[in-house]
Image (cartoon, rainbow over all chains, first blue to last red; front, side):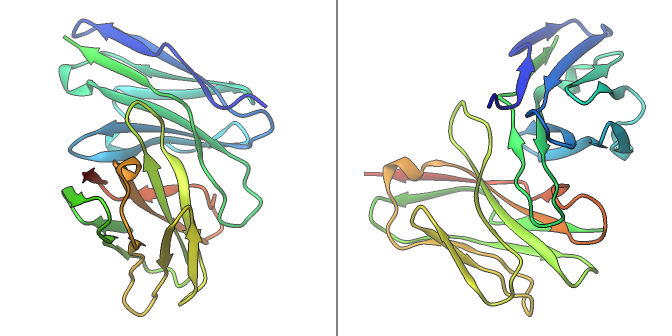
Amino acid sequence: DAGVTQTPRHEVAEKGQTIILKCEPVSGHNDLFWYRQTKIQGLELLSYFRSKSLMEDGGAFKDRFKAEMLNSSFSTLKIQPTEPKDSAVYLCASSLDWGNAETLYFGSGTRLTVL
Amino acid sequence: GDSVTQTEGLVTLTEGLPVMLNCTYQTIYSNPFLFWYVQHLNESPRLLLKSFTDNKRTEHQGFHATLHKSSSSFHLQKSSAQLSDSALYYCALSLNSGGSNAKLTFGKGTKLSVKS
C-alpha cells in the first residue's frame, strides 16, 4: 500500500501569494490531519478531518489557513496570503481509527519558504 | 487545555550511556493514550511506542516507557544509546474522549544527539 503522499516537496512563495499544498492519505484511512512543524513550536495541529468532515480547524490558524477534503483520497491546505512567518514544514498524516490508540502515518512533508 | 511537556532542546550523550527523555502531560481525562514518535533527519515522524495501560512497561526497538498516571508521566528510556538513535523525539497525548484517538497533542520535541 502507498503511504501518505504530499506534493510539492518544496515550495517557495513571495509574501502575499496564495499557495496550495496537497495530500493523499493512505487508502482506506478515515482520519486526516494537517500539522505545521517548526523548530520552536514542534508539531502544531492545523486541521483534522474525519470521513471528509472538518472536525477541527486549528483555532489560531483559521484566518489565513484553509484545509479542504473534497473526497476521501485527497486534501488540500491553502495559505492565503502567505507571510514569512509561515515558513515551516507542513505535514499531512492519516489514520484508521478503530477506537483504540491508533497510529498516525505521516507524509514526507512540504517545506514552505516565504520570502 | 491538554498539554505535553518534554525535556526541551538538545540532549547530547556518549554512545553506550543510558537514554532518558522526560515526558509529562496534563489532561482532565482519566484514560489518555501516550505515544513516542521518532523523526530521523530528512524523514517524517513515525511511531516508536504507545501505551494506555497504567504502570505497564511497553518496549520497542530497545526503547521502553511506562505510563504512570499517578505522576502523569511517560518517560522514554534505553539502556545503551547508539549512534543511530540520534533523532528528534516527540511525546504525544491522545484522549479517549469520543473523538478521534489519533488526534494527538504533541510536545515540542527533544533532539537526541549520540556521539562516539
